[in-house]
Image (cartoon, rainbow, N blue to C red; front, side, top):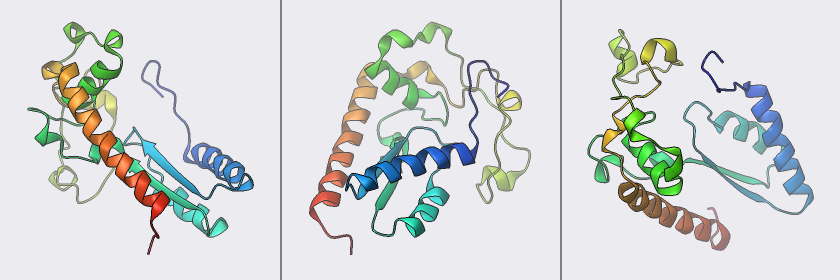
Length: 171
């Protein structure tokens, strides 16, 4: 909430919106939904579990587009937030929104607690303490060409997923 132009929504708000979407699709006879998430801070697993109780014959799949493929296979310095990966994909889709001359170097502070860095447990980041500009990973090596290659490979994975969900039994 404290960052300019960032809008915080509560879990309950996100769940209410997803519930309304599922309810509407269900009433229309649709029984499958794929959520392609673009924000690591907003996971859907708990919501999907709750909705599967109320809608047992409605399949909801959730995926984070940036984890579908190994970023290291496409980028020299993948980071975590506003990095080479995200910046390259944005340059591919909307180059007019990216100005690499204004990009930071992606320097950030890790947790002082090593177990958190090793992902033994998760806690939300305090972005004001993590980095100057919320960047975690150097975006300066980004290019539209890298973004296109990655985005197209991810799209192929999603096309296969959609085909399988439509044409195959789940179990």
